[in-house]
Amino acid sequence: MNGLDECINKSLDILIENETFLSHELKSLFKSFKEEKTEIGFSFGKLCYWHYEAFSDSVNDDIYKIAAAVELLILSFDIIDDLQDKDSDNSWSRTPELSLNVALAMLIMASKTIDETSFEHKRAAITILEESALKSISGQQLDLLNNCRDENSYVQMITLKSGSLTAMSCLIGEVLAKGEVSKEVGAYGTYIGIIQQIKNDIQSLKAWGPKNDLLNKRFSLPIIYLLSQKNDVSKSVADYYNDDIVTILDHKEAENELTNGGAIRYAVTVKNVYKFKAINDLENIELNDLAKDYLQKLIK
Image (cartoon, helix red, strand yellow):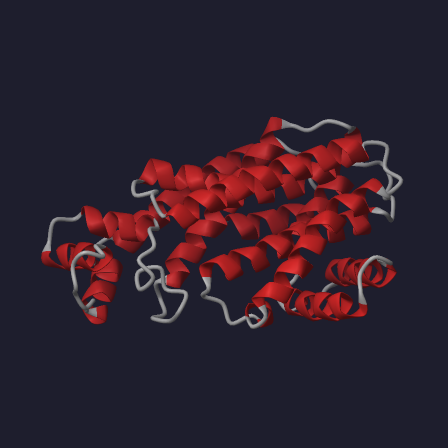
């Protein structure tokens, strides 16, 4: 872990240990779930920190608690998402009933943690967190309904589900520093979430395992494109998605069509539209070089 990840991780440990209303059993699960998150880093918390630092004259150490609170919300949503999708091998999927209680505790602790800090504009930060959480839940509901079967509706869904959370992370840092937010930060924060979700969608199709969207009859941009083509492979995939028709999906044919038939290229093209939008908005915001480099890596 780098220095910032270590500070956020330490703050999470302190928050868990000091929460008097958590039982020993809940704390134990809480810590184990947090350790799995530690392995991939705290990207949302870092977005919060970088934007606070960019707009603040001096750093209040409570910002690490805020970054940890953001990560609590994100991890709670990750757990709930995995329990709903039933396609994860993370430890929380092994005990769904117990894990749900941990996720609920994380949700409550996220806003509670912000409220207990010394920031002047903490109420504005809590409002951003709550509104963004509701948007993301609405997006998750649309995702579970699996009815977003064209580009516009699908992008609207991931804007709510993923874009709202990355925008939230940036905006909380900004509002704590200056008491207001800028439309550019909200915009490129949203675009980063869209970009990351499309990248995940593409990655999902590269392995024929439990998370593969095609095998699970889920819709994503590459699959939407594939189904729009009028050929034998698209027809067989459409039949596979139709529960009224008994058919076996030819993995090799479908994989070849996704890779060589333009579906992946189409998804990358859509991703790049949001990449250039994000770059354009990012150029209008003064961030230090470390923060800008971090954001640019997320935008790629």
